[in-house]
Amino acid sequence: MALSLSCPAYAGDIQVGGDDGTTESDQPGAGSGTDAGADSGKGSIGAHIRINQSTPASSGSTASATSSDANWEPPVCWYEPMYTPEEYEKFIKGAYGGAAGGSPAEEYAKKREKEKYHKGDKGLWWQVQFPDDTYDKACPVTTDNWEIWVPPADPQPDPNKVTPEILSELAFNSTKLPTPPVELQPRADRLLVNLGTRVAFKGDLDRVWTTASLDYKGVQLAATTVATPLALKVDAGTADADPRSCTYDLVKGKDGYTADSEDSGCNVTYLRSSGTGTYPFKASITWKVTWTDSADPNGPPQQPGLPDGLSTFEQDVTVKEAQAVNRARGMSHG
Image 1: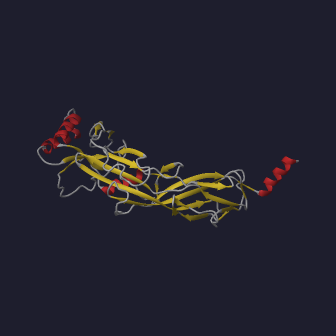
Image 2: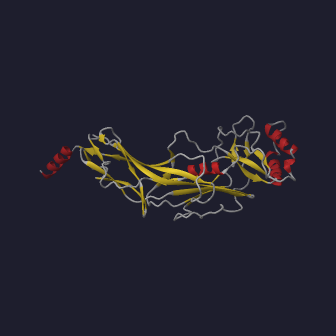
Image 3: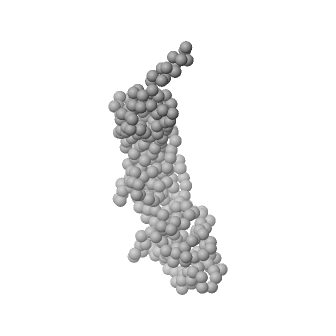
């Protein structure tokens, strides 16, 4: 990827991507999960990290998962394996060969030349990568070390080297979850004051897994996040409702996870008309997220854990006074 860096150590456009974006092989164990409908979503992050997601059981819409922890953030950058010593020499001479005398770019090239690009040594040059083509100033990697030399036995691994844990965070950040399959009865534009509104759960959900994997130049790593639906939370969108919010547990049945709202006391009764406006009704599903250090979603869960995921459905609802509705109907018959 070509990055225009605003850092003082460099000026102008510098080629940071390693190659043309092709890979030598697909992700290890692609499609090896046991969930039905695997391989629904594929993509890539950085240079050689591949994303593969299972097909959500629900036929409804999906949206990117959000974290229940407002302070959680995905990795802003990481190192990936990129070059053999010979490839790295070619890259440096091509990217920095025309740098002006005394410039930071020329000094960087000289630094690598003094190291003789580690030709003859066993190992690979790893290069900093980003989630997209925008350089993030929060990246802890310095402009003096866009690439690092990694021998087969790395005595002091760089903390920013890609690991299964980093892959799990990238997988979580790439996950798309089904939006809550809820339906209001009566319809959202026909709700009445003091008339119970049933929040019907239409459909079943199943766990959703996403694998992030790296298979390049002999380096094979993978991590799979598994999101399991736990609960459906309903928010009426106004304090003038009983209850204002409530939660249904999601229980696994033969067709997946569902909520029984038929006889639940959790249905909403609006106590006041929305007037000429609306109320912002919201339903959200909480997903328990675990991860494995392989492409297998059924592998043993690893630590540290990931925050819960959330998927949300929002809808504006109109609530009218029952008397006003009856009066309007009487006038239409008159």
